[in-house]
Length: 343
Image 1 (tube, rainbow, N blue to C red):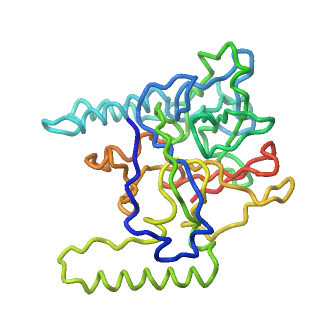
Image 2: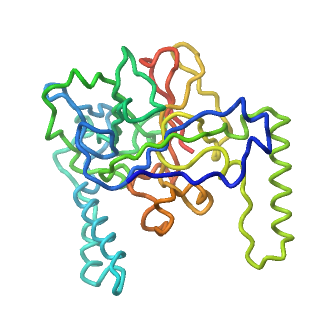
Image 3: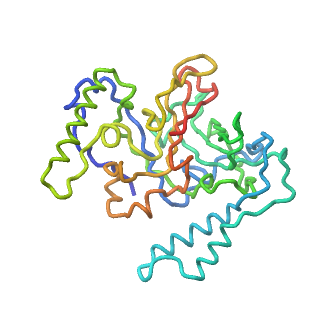
């Protein structure tokens, strides 16, 4: 089933005609539980990885001997999903609660040393033919594959994320790796994705307000304040929240490719290529949820009757504290190292 973004509550260009020059597109990926194979774009599905090519590993020395087994994490999710979908007496039974506690226990893998290479988790793969806003990779590669380490133990702080993005030409892959290595345990449940098929949809988008021209930003702020005052003075006992630029009219939530990054947690930060200093473009956003209470206007038409607490996080991926990961690429040379920001 395709996914359709509802029309925006207001025509933002009618309100602020200057925004027309900023208009861009972004492709909402709309991941939903399914059984993808290596020939299609997916989150958490099998990757088109050559059988004769070494699987990506984390080589930074860090402890990875203690954590939870991916199989236990997935089993726990299945139990909880089934329990809350029961029409009669929804929620885990006493027996299920006991099993859930057991599945939530951390394990220690004695043979894992801090210096041992750790297999990365294959997070997603995107084919250019499936995703309109996915740019060509280096040497005209048509397939982007995303990996990450399942432990927060990297960088100067020792608590950072490790990403590994690989581009390839899909037509060159013949024999496919069918049983890739997997980490025995992971440090954080949010690094383990559930298999999802994608329903790409290209929509219009506009920059984060803090990056607009100063006078335009001031007019948007004044308009939003007037909207809020009008809602507060409304005689309606339960007035609907007024539409806002950030959450309703500019940048959609959820997994998406291209468009503009949101900087709602930190101040906007220049994302220039560290190799050639070219301003980088947003390549991919990995989001912890498809919609929430503040961004419900973006909830697809096909999902309108689905409760948020059960259906808004189909990938089960969590970035930071329920945030989003924005990954940037160099438009001058896509082979240059990527950069990213967590919001």
